[in-house]
Image (tube, rainbow, N blue to C red; front, side):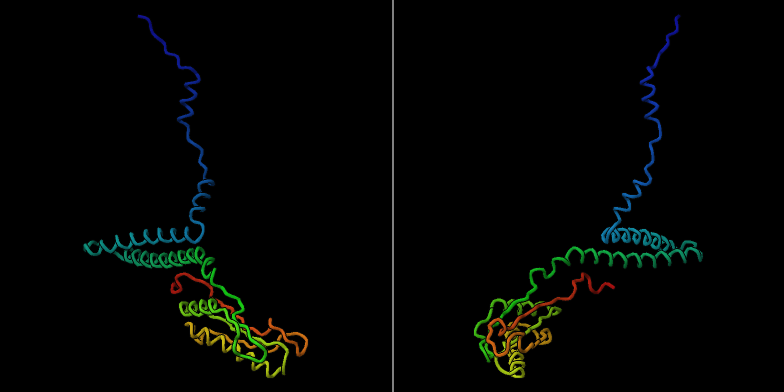
Length: 231
């Protein structure tokens, strides 16, 4: 009986050996991807939440051990206490990071369309009663201040150079108070309003100028922060 020999082509053999070889480890690449996943406030929030979950699992394991009256020692006690403290710290850190992420997302749009810097009242010479007002703007600002107690507004009034400087200083104060009272009627609180009387505007003496016989309102808001109670 003749023996049969089986020949494996070299190409097939090489392919099989390649398939069995150990793939190259891209440690740096994988590490960079992991770091990228945990970057930023949201990534850090998730990282801390994951660490808290791991610590709580350790603390709860010991607690169940005790509840079932298993044998325990001082090392187990310390391990449980440290795990519980670590979990609390990670949860606090996760909340802070998450709130900061929310601020980054929301902060740019907060009050974006509510900032006002506008002339709202026009006066005749020597008068503190406006002959023209922007009622829609005054109403909007008054209601906005009522709905946002943390916001404020500056009411600035001026005069032209007709008359004596001392009289015009008093006149500008009265003009500013007139507009302030209009805002209060629309819902603003007196404590939200800063009244500024600038008196005579710069220019030639005894010169009538309607652009200076006005009152201007400028709104402002504190820096927006999500979760202000999270310390």
